[in-house]
Image (cartoon, rainbow, N blue to C red; front, top):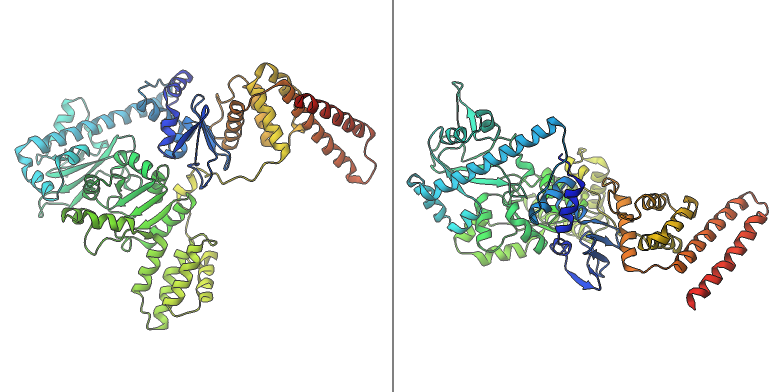
Length: 593
């Protein structure tokens, strides 16, 4: 992965509007020099999330999520640090400069960039052919017959591949691309006689882009019913993986973040029709069941995913995996069941936009949908049929939070509809959860998912003093250096706070600069300390009082340790404790006066 010079990172950071970036995920209101709002990383009713627009920092005092603007984009959009720098650089018009790379890494990066350029050029050619070539007339008629207007078609870059065997191939070579590059981009393929020809011919083309808008490949629909080959032909799997891509994510990302909801459909034209109807938070899985990787892609933007597709037809195992991943990411999966044999594009073509809206708003939770579908299919007239229904629903319930009210409600519904005892249903579910069914490997995307912060417990008075003293040292570095040098790990109650102390000693002027991005706990704590330093003024009196209180706590620890053997406490420690009590009382009087 490309590395960027520190100067580049600082230029990008300086250009970013932190409030604008964060506001895409939660509403903020000004409170003095900072902004506050509900935390976008955990559920809460009282705002504990704080944004410092000047330092480009965020911190939640509830779940302790924190960091700079790059970490925020990494967490919410599922990006690496270099990708976050590039994304923000592009957004705010800052040119990023890379440091010297390993020659092989640089060569691979340049190769990828050439393939992206080639795919973009080809997408533009397909668009111009669709709208300008007489031979594309039938394609235009077909799209118009689906109720799709020119504005939405051009917005998504829908095009048409000519019928010629080598038009893209020859155009690409004239532009300076090799046959090997055309093959690597999935635009050309080898024929039986050894030559190469265009992969897409006489097909409507739908460019599949990543969240940054780069063309990864194409989905292409045959126009003629009797055309050779499949109805839909995709770029080869090596160019992009369907399981990791979502059609329309580049255009839907903003609307998804604003609404906190993603609508997932099966096909390209479904996405186009929904966007045209104003439902712009829509993306497509391109004919497959939604995957953990696709959920990971959505998790940075959406709190809820509505499957406007035939979830009953999708693989049950795939849906259970998706449910587990969504649960781990605190996403809600719901199903808007489409009428038999119809999809969103069909309904919208028929003018039933209100019906589509009703279906989306009336979506039910995925587990409830799956349970009801299994019960409806079951032969409830026989014990064997009811047993088979229990076998179907047990994995669904086992994947749910065991303490959720929703699971308990489903248990009661199943027992009622299958005319059995709720205890029997729970025993079957518990057996499934304990491994009674076939063990299932944990999805790779779930293993790699960033750890979501949980609301933290309240800090002790000692922990608050420790963090407050380090924060005051940052706020007044000239005096703070003395206190940082006086502090030792024995003054502190946790190894993490001791690590934060050591980091601050070495980075007192710029504590956020160079933080190890893979050490989430340290990043979070240092961010919290820096945010506190910006909020609370420091004084030497306050620093001295806090230090003495920590010194007193350390002495109490030493006394407790000495008394474990049952002997008398050491006289020198007792004398030191009394001395500290007097000095603390003095400084408390000074501060009060």
